[in-house]
Length: 394
Picture 1 (cartoon, rainbow, N blue to C red):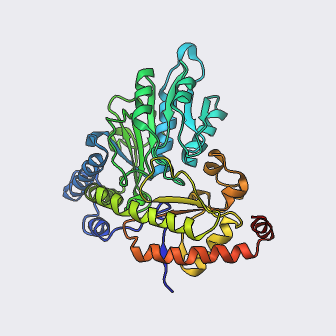
Picture 2: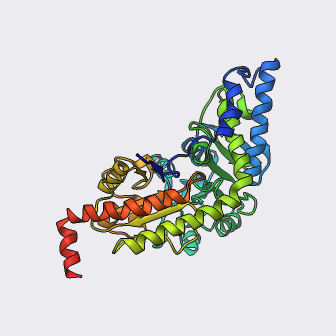
Picture 3: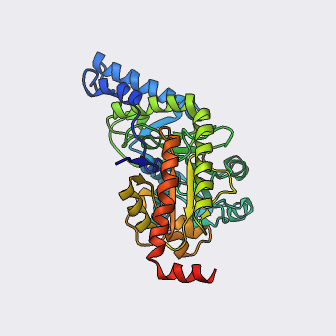
């Protein structure tokens, strides 16, 4: 059976060049990067090279990059680290601003803060998933210590206006963090232009292995430690470095820096072809977030009259892998919090699928999707009495 993978926002395959770069650090170059002998110093040199490669991807200095286990740890360190190191006027409770469409790594961290007495404001978004900058300005208080707004949404691909948000944060003297897990390696990032203080990214979203990520921390930013141990990474993130994973992330970042522009141009053309083809072939289908700036690889569509989970399974049986939303929410009974936040009724949110393209997506893959998705939707709609009645009225 032909199998096509259109779920790159969930995870990406490790590139052969990335794996090749990693392999020596599982075998001959196995040294601990904190050891002073030759074995250790070879590992240390590899870690520092990777730090330079990751820094170059987001336009910063190597000493501002700290390696973590992935995006969730990076988000948590940024959020708890800032709140834990902040003071407010008269000792009042600190205040954090985020949005309703953040990844669970941010939302659940903020909910945990609320249980500790921290005030959190959740900004609403419009029907394309964008925050209102005036709402952001209006949410600021003297106690606000952190704004955490993701760069690109994992379900819609919507790109938030980080440059404007950064300007607002700077004027208010508030720390600004972004979850860039879905944007790093797909669209240009410049932490200085965005006036970011913290940025999170994850290796397995940009063709590096799972279990490795990075946190950018602007020099001078006060950040409370989450972990306690040795003096690794200048005490910011203790624990023996995952040298092979770090090398893989560095190589993947270097490759993304080189191919980003060409990848974006090619994938946006394929994504548009997929969207337009599905809308033209499937009655009543709709594109979510299509009017806003988006990452070039992400498409989210509703197919009223079907359950997304049923459609997902039907497509998998036909050889097409896609998603009903975030992989971290797989198995959730509730509809996507992102889709309900943009104003969709639960029924339409449950009838939606995300298709995310990647570096290895081909024209043949898109042609295959345009063949099997309309067929699967039509078959499921035939089994839906509700849809059949609505279609008969039309």
